[in-house]
Image (cartoon, protein in one colour):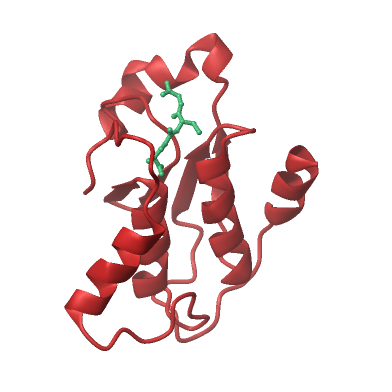
Length: 134
Ligand SMILES: N[C@@H](CCC(=O)N[C@@H](CS)C(=O)NCC(=O)O)C(=O)O
């Protein structure tokens, strides 16, 4: 079921005119079966953002390659690369997408920086963070 959902979430579409860019600049690195990638895939789908899907096979240590470790020093997935911007941590990826591509909002308008921090805290994973938040 997860694979089906992940597959149906992968798609290419044309973002709205109000978004930052229209070219296919986004690369999304993820592993099938990873729950953290799923929420990012949902965000990309809801926002109709085109992206290059970079699936890594963790069983083959593809997340330990020098190329991948250069963008994710801990080898952790998911990672989103948007031109020169690299975002690690699924929550941070969602907030980044919402800020950079606001035409279909995920979170609505934040009234203050403090509210954003509270929302991030409320949504954060109870699992220990192994990669740094950008
Ligand atoms: N807090 C991180 C958790 C990321 C995470 O634990 N990813 C797992 C896959 S679900 C991973 O990269 N596993 C491979 C590894 O650690 O080598 C997030 O929200 O993105």
